[in-house]
Length: 481
Image 1 (tube, rainbow, N blue to C red):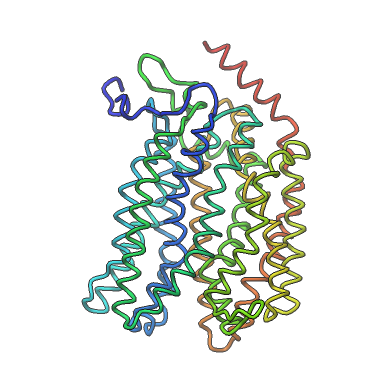
Image 2 (image 1 turned 180 degrees about the vertical axis):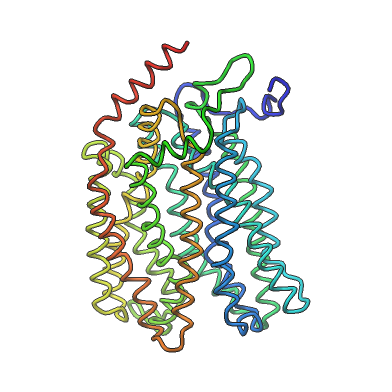
């Protein structure tokens, strides 16, 4: 370890050692991840939209259903492997940050080759699509995602700092889904789709995604340099720059799986992410083209793309404003309680929207309520996840970060693949109404999902004893020195 590349001064964090500072929050947890998540969200959301520009691929029928469905297997394996490697990593730069740095070139290359498809035979192009998509989804994205979403948990034990950092760190994810995927990208799509020929249209796709891929590379560098794993550093050996990796992966998994709070978190993300995917950019775009291809707003004519941007913009205003007050509210009333309130408002917003999915005013009202409801889950759920990881450390005497993020990212990955495949399966079924399928998945699904999660979160009481558990961890570390 003394001669490890990770001991090089050039690779040291630029963040202060003692506490989370302003520049760390602004660069390491906001700007860097914003650049990366803009790219990963758009690629994950719109790759099928690009693939549909190949008429002969669309004519195959099942390929665009089977691709995301079958890719779930390598994607899940990739997330599991990365999570295990992350848990066993020991460097002076931490366990997660090295993966963020490594993800930069991987995201840049895989993001570009997904959209640069040699125009050879149909079979060759389908193989190219499958291979390059999995290079991104089963390799590059897990390497980045597993490390990135663990950083809040590894940054600090200070509960107020952690709550604030959770808000800042989740703004890029919200912006990725809202600002970039649902507002900016539909505007770009209007320009892309205005191309006079299909080959020009595909060239425009390649230009846009090449730019996003390059930006993601820069984002990884920024995030790596301006973050710090203070919790990991607690166990560093000053001479060797190493740490005890603790028990085996299997022991960590068995320990985590024996705790109810860990299960609540994982089930939460399964249903929550399913709802996010069903109202994400791909389904969102189909919904607006289905119901509002020829709409108007205060006399301004709209098409499906511009309607999507309008709905996302207006619905995103309360979500953006929520970052200003959700942290103090969560500190006062509890993270769990704020999340429960969000579920109630979400269900109400879905019900309102379903009154008349073809009425733009009604859907706008419903989307504003949905935007308000998303504030707790979007900004403070990761802080609650960090509380659970501290609880597990207090209970078992070792951290289970790597395996927990492995399971977390596997769930997210599987859900993302299944959601797109399930939607396409029903949407492409000639026996079903397109309007009914789109309105159910985009507007109605979260009534059931968030109802289940409301009941589940009633049993999440980890916040009651988290300070005492952190004191126990501190006592153990003091006794071990």
